[in-house]
Length: 168
Image (cartoon, rainbow, N blue to C red; front, side, top):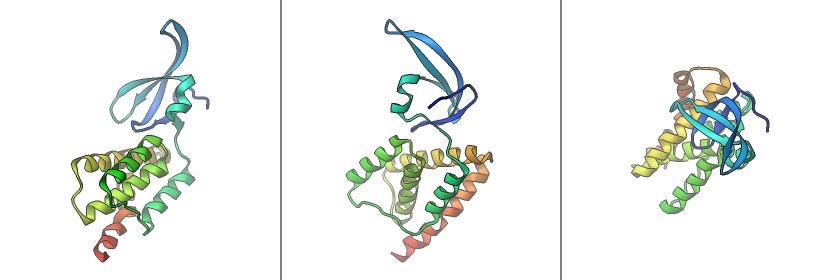
């Protein structure tokens, strides 16, 4: 995948970033081309070797069609939450690391549902917050809308989960 300066991209588990520059650097005695990303949520700079960009999951923002699909999946009633804490946490970690927005949204949905049924552990609360941040920030950038406006849309999409939890 080709990236150019100014492109908005997603770096898995870090969120949306902007390609600041693409340049050659000497590293370990070899010359390699690096992509310099400014991560929007933290203002940090990340250097990714071009040759590793696919391996680390660097990708362009999702399309508006994918935004609609993700919001629809958040609205759907079906939620799967594995009961075993350790297995659930590991599965969710893998989904978060994948960088795939739909998988991160699944983590957001399942942990939101679980939090309406019982108190989450500290690690799961942190993961829930991270998943929410990653989903909202990418959807907002993809739709060219503000974070608060997208946060509201995501919360509205997830609103049915609390009702579903009450029925269980």
